[in-house]
Length: 262
Image 1: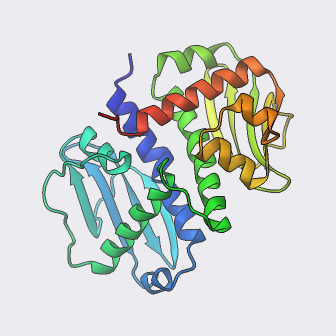
Image 2: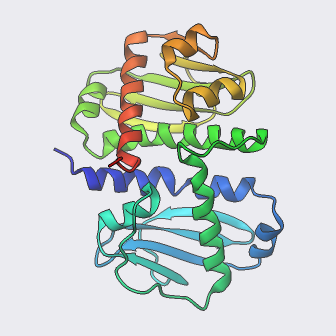
């Protein structure tokens, strides 16, 4: 059975941290333009392990790279996997020592702005401005399709059993008529996620959201898909059975990432 903390960490590193690039590319603030003067590498890792990913800032661009950089400018190490996960899931992070590179103030401020930007994903954050609502929908779509793939690659038994006997199938999500889109490809137990519309074959399941408002109600406000379908917020094309299973895995991912209520 896959270790839950390791599964969450896999999603954190490969599905959530890459959203930093989305935030960076979408940001047009004066602070962002000021901080683009600072190049460097910000490493996040679990102390004494090869578990981590780093943010690379070069020539006004941002990339997220999996693994350990040999000489980062800023290093945040965590005592254990659970301590790293907490930084991204609403808990209290447990660091494995003082951050290295505190003199790199510009990079530290950039990291803080990126982490604050991720707060838009929290279920209790509901921006009113249309561009921010679009950003939230886009980030959720990108994150959840990738997280579904990571759930499979990370060894979740139920997800592996669901994907094992499927032929080459595309599970597509898109905002109609010309909004963001993302997909999950399943083939013989293997999975791969992607952004945009998959064009090489017709989707096996296609969740078509009625504009940003329809997508926001389902993805950000957790509106029941049955009611959303009846209200015209979403149109499902393809197998209801497999779409329902995919929806169940999406709920599982949300439960894994959100802090438990006490």
